[in-house]
Every structure is written in structure tokens, then in C-alpha cells.
Length: 124
Image (cartoon, rainbow, N blue to C red; front, side, top):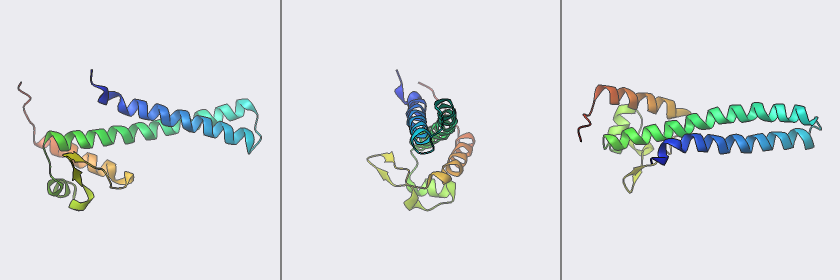
């Protein structure tokens, strides 16, 4: 059973739960809102943070999957994405994403285009 495919969902659920609790607590204690209003605002925050965290987890997983699949070096990643090689450190054969999260969509898009233009046959 491959647990990596569940990582974005679990990560997003934990983030949503924490944001829900925090928003409810802040609304109840700081703003003295009613319980239904606090739960409603907490639910809105939870939905927002679920979506944000799911995308971040999925993007991280996809970037690392493509880099591993094609055995891309830091120089190759820099050439594909148009960034610096120092933005893609590889330690113990694992890519470390140290670039700001706001740049992850650009990196993911560039790597998905690379993957489409360089197919690998999966013959086992």
C-alpha cells in the first residue's frame, strides 16, 4: 500500500483541523461571537486552509516525483525551471524544496511540461 498518495490529504486535514480550532477559539474568546458564528467562521477558515495545504502537499510530492523519475540534478532542474541550481539542493538523493512556496506552481508547471516532452516507457 502506497501511503505517499495520501500525504496531501492527511496534511490538509491536519491543517484544516488546526485552523478550525484556532479560528473558533479566537472568535469566541477575543471577539466574543456566538458559538454558531464562531463555528461558521472556523469552517470557512478550515476550508481555505484545507485547499491551500492540499495544493502545497500535492505540488511538493509531484515536484519530487518528477525529479526522482528522471534522476534530475540540481543543474538540470535549474535549466528546466530557469532558476538557480542552488535553489534545488539534493541531499542523500532527495530533492529539498527550499524555494518559496509561491514559486512552486511555476516549478511544477515547468516539470510537468518536461515530463510530457520526455516520456519514459514503463516496461516492467
